[in-house]
Image (cartoon, rainbow, N blue to C red):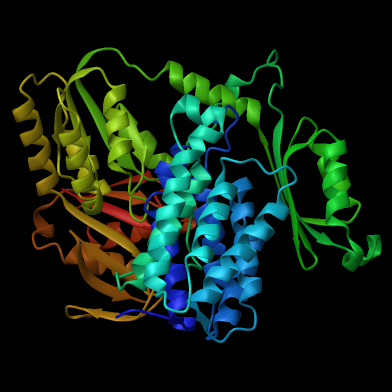
Length: 551
């Protein structure tokens, strides 16, 4: 069935789909950032910007109200240069729909052009070959090829095809992209959003997640500050971002001149400037050698809500150092695994993993991530532990793409399974079949449990779940839902059929769990299961407050 009028429910569903579209390619988009002084997180910034918009949505029903609320959330939650530009594009689209109960396809296409206009105004020196170009060319094509007989599905098909065609041309427009033979990362993110919106429009199931409690889905490794020494020159300056509330005590917020403000930043030798306002809130992004110049200028007009300053010379040194370390010494086995959280990264490294890829639930690495990791290793046999059921097929696909390399996938479906399998890895075993068999047997023998919270009411099997309760998942099966997370842990462990015959429980503590909570959980387990020896690791993993491996 073709769609010619988009109501509020359809638009809200498409916004969800757009977020899911970019989430699915977030790390790939991050990796496209090839500039010598990278923010390094285009995919994350664009995703989190849209999530900021979704987190504000409530019971709005009209297209105008939905888009206005969503746009304001995007503007205030915008992250990085790409996120700021995207938020302004969304705000422009929303402005064109402000009074609409529903929108026709022709009105939707026209709104895209409004988004282009606002996005260009947000950037002091627009550069072609970036997301702006993809915005403009795809909107231009859509407006010229849409009329009252065009369905929403047809419109999106043309919009996506033109965006893809323009994206491929970006590396011809910017020399740095041509040199690296990649496309613009922001443009790639926009294409992913459009594809996700089209999927929702055409009926593909979209996970309508709870955007109010999301944590960052890509763990960032610790910064190596030793790469910026007492003799290091500040070659690249600082990426400086701030969110400012304009103050009447310092002037008339209504009379604030955004163009004059941008000019003042340029006069202070800033570049990569993006400055915009939403009501009485000013959002600023600039690259500068002297962050104080930016901060003092902003404080002439208001007071800070948020400030972020990053040393881009240090970022550049980290990337350079990573490139130097890319190739490792030849070895019999190379081990690649997936983990979320600094503690889990460190633990897997200590157990023998050569490369730990950021990822896990809601942050699945791509096949290309695995291929790139495989190519970094100089080994006779490469072992991959995906540690997630949703990543298993991707790992297997990556293995099939690497011709001439002996890649074996140990089918681990959780972090506890990966931990147990890697714990029995023995580099002295020459027979790769024997090695994989031992690791597979170990992961099959462990009981793997997860404690997290429910994001909605539901019934699964014979378990009734209430939103906000702690739920226990044992070997991929929901086994309990409790108001108390300690009770959920006890019930989950009791669900292990032969728990009385097991001896060791390893508890992995997730991100955000306090020391007091960790101690209380450990004591609760030890009191309920006196015969189990409990080992505790602070994994800092996201999504799951606690994980357990019971052997």
